[in-house]
Amino acid sequence: MEQTNLQKFIEYSEEKFTKRVIFKEGDSAVFVLNFAPQQALPAHKHPGANVYLLVVAGSGTFTIDKKEIKVQKNDVVLCTAEEEMAFLNDGQENTSLYVLLNKIPDERYAQNI
Image 1: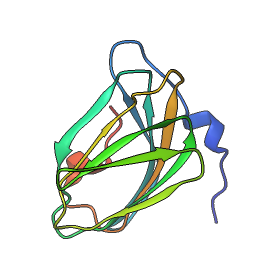
Image 2: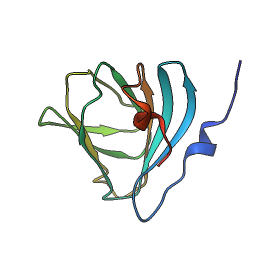
Image 3: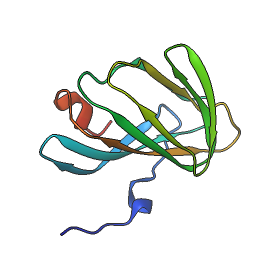
Image 4: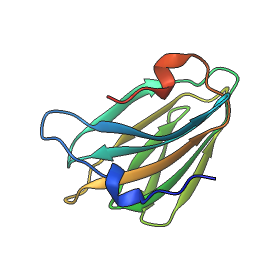
């Protein structure tokens, strides 16, 4: 059993979004993506893995397979392995996303940035 506090992983940077890994166990990873206003996650896929995202603070816009989806605090999004996903914090406040990746495609997906 492990326990931690989510707040320890919510860390913003003026330069670019941050990613802080909370747990990595086998093929799964849990992390937080933190975005200052106007910061973005480029379009990408997660081969062989579904991604579950919970907005824990702020708001923004996901683009999933070229469809824009506005989200705010407490919204939950599922992005399947076949879908291309991007995110933009187009709001005025910092935004944090709690992310569960059920199968890590490769080690790059489970590293702090």
